[in-house]
Length: 185
Image (cartoon, rainbow, N blue to C red; front, side):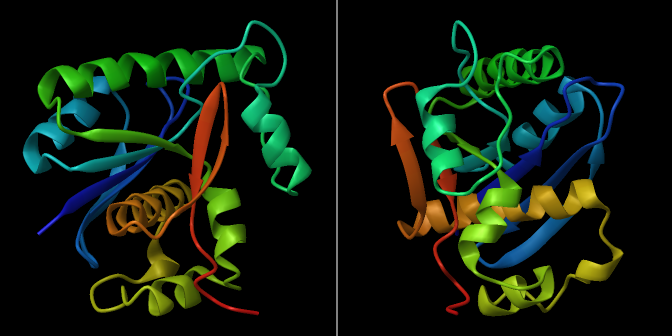
């Protein structure tokens, strides 16, 4: 059974990082952590095959990456990695990716943007998304914090990636993974 993880990474370890761990379509755990060590401890505990992080995983010299511009042209609202508050996030994410790969070279780490992934799903609510993805048995979407919700959406992106059913926007400087149109409109 494939275990995947979604991380709604905060730029600073003083701020809340939401996460979710899925095994197939079953939610093992959601929660809030702060430090890189806490994130790495979760990776060591669950050894996820795919980890989707809500953060750019590359840094342009200035402004937006080409992949960010492609996202914006498709109606997804992303911020430039070079903004001061975003820089801290990107560097933290890049450091975490190195640590994760030193623990498990087989782990696949992908970039996502939960708000855009939710939009690409065509679902009208998190409850609908979870229902269509057959994830309703053990999770109450209404009790999750915003950080946990974004972590859960990121975990769903990782899950759909593991199934080969993801959508991605790709350019020479990055690739952002999203959800397929799970809820047809």
